[in-house]
Image (cartoon, rainbow, N blue to C red):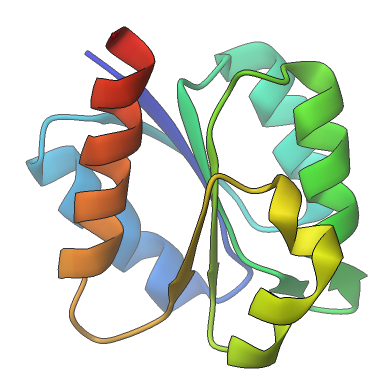
Length: 120
């Protein structure tokens, strides 16, 4: 069973993503802040991370760098409501960029793709 870490500061979204991904068969851990994300990542050792860019007052892009330093080969998907970050070179370290939507089809598809690619 693949392990997914969701880093999201909006509790409703965090719960929705957790439930949806657990229904897909993933083991899911969650974090609501940058500090918790790095601690959970270290302990849970996820196969993939779904990361929001805006984490309250914290900057998710710093977390992206820290996560990649922990384990460079682990895929990270940036999941954000802000489309303009896609053109920011600091997001290029992520393996995918998904704009938040009420429809989780794209996010689930990216997760499946990246985890399948990782197995190859």
